[in-house]
Length: 450
Ligand SMILES: NC(=O)c1ccc[n+]([C@@H]2O[C@H](COP(=O)([O-])OP(=O)(O)OC[C@H]3O[C@@H](n4cnc5c(N)ncnc54)[C@H](O)[C@@H]3O)[C@@H](O)[C@H]2O)c1
Image 1 (cartoon, rainbow, N blue to C red):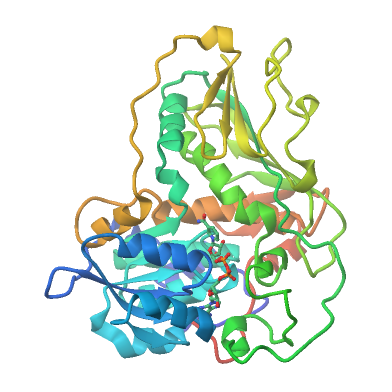
Image 2 (cartoon, rainbow, N blue to C red):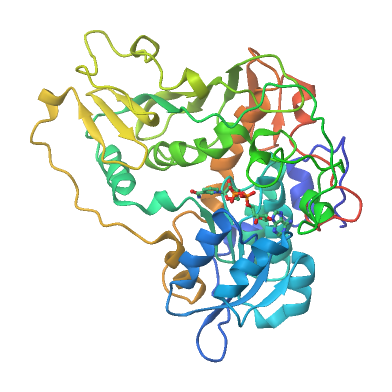
């Protein structure tokens, strides 16, 4: 069945079944990728500047990787990466790279702006390639669902680029929560004082893009518009609703990852945001986003999760809803982190630092599990070569991303509780919100399955 972009399209379970994207797919486990005759994993990289440069270095540091292809829409960035990997073929359009290189690549790394994650990753999966894709997995909720289903259906190794997921402090926090150290958890507070929002009006000052940049390819699936310097490329696209996911999608995916994994959360029942009125241009510069999740074996009967960002982070102690007579013992909250509120105590988890148990007196002398740092990148390479599995596969990253993105959708309807039917991918009480779960792709950029 051909899958076309259609603005009013609302996927149902029946749709997924017809498209062969659900049900039987659940039976498949990732298979291994074919490595080259010399036993190396030949990788191709889409987006090699910014974080893509760091991803390239980290993947290439594995002794069994051969960097075979490099792609970037900015020639200056492409040439800088190519100087370090002179044997790799160079491309500006990832569709050409995947089509032309075919069987001479074994795995694909996607490090582009968020709006290009799904089209690039899906093209890789549809061509039978394992994928390492930067966070958040996708820009749209529908895309996250589809990547997860197709990776599963094709049995391909996948990993979302949340490298801190494999760090010792985060792994240790997961073990401690699951061992019940602070008892069943009723609430999680999470925050980032970064500001990846833009409260201004429509973008003006349009100009000709620099010669080095292929602006049409950079826009990709998004609606065409003129270039403006220092607004989109590089980096600032994350503030704008058509390209990024704001601070919630950008940092929230790292900070929410440990609570999500530790508590084995599924899909939220609802999400509600407090922020300024929508401008339809940028994400809000400050947000408070509330979610309710169904209870799990590590939580009370339900789990309330609250996110604060921009200069509303870190939250004030009075906003933490701490149980009576509990406090932080004068501890300053870090600029980014999470706080778990359990029946027996609190766990403060500063962003990529060791967990702190509170009140201190209650937990003095409590044992800390011995956990080592993992290498998130090498884990993906090893899994592609048939050794072990990935810890942030699309099976995990898809539902995590869908949950976060529901909050991004809620930003467009401040103070309205959006009730969520995850199975059918629908907001049940506000039809206008369903129009924001999937957007049509620009003509010439259609991708099967999206
Ligand atoms: N995991 C982390 O800690 C971490 C940190 C920073 C960024 N990121 C993620 O990495 C991604 C990139 O972020 P960034 O800050 O490096 O952005 P950036 O704008 O600085 O870099 C993006 C790169 O991709 C290239 N690019 C853009 N569109 C492309 C296309 N269609 N095909 C090929 N190349 C294309 C750009 O030219 C540029 O080199 C984002 O998804 C972001 O969320 C992750």
